Length: 135
Image (cartoon, rainbow, N blue to C red):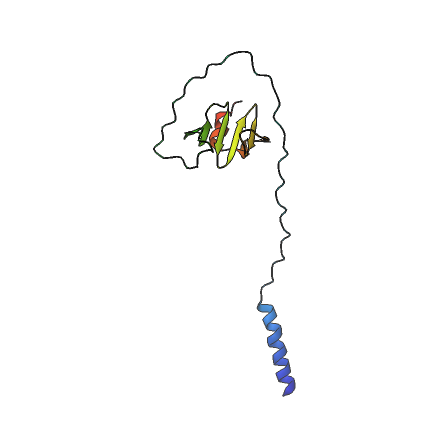
């Protein structure tokens, strides 16, 4: 009788192992993304020609800006670009605590004075990508 109870207990214990699904192996941790290399923009002499900027009308939008304006309030919201255009600066934009600058390629910074870090089109807002798509 003891042998039957012992055999039945062993059978139940082993049967429980068969019913349990195998546990997945833990995945190795994903390394954090690497930081982009900081490359200062090339220093060029300003062109000799005088360019008179054409006044551009702000893009009409029935929606207010989705993002807070830049510190100092020197930006004008452009809904077609989805960024603030910084007044008095050439090709300088702002959105979500980040400044974007075009100088024969895209650069970003947390300050309008730099330092600037080079980036590709995946690192800038989509409206700015379209602005210089052919350049």
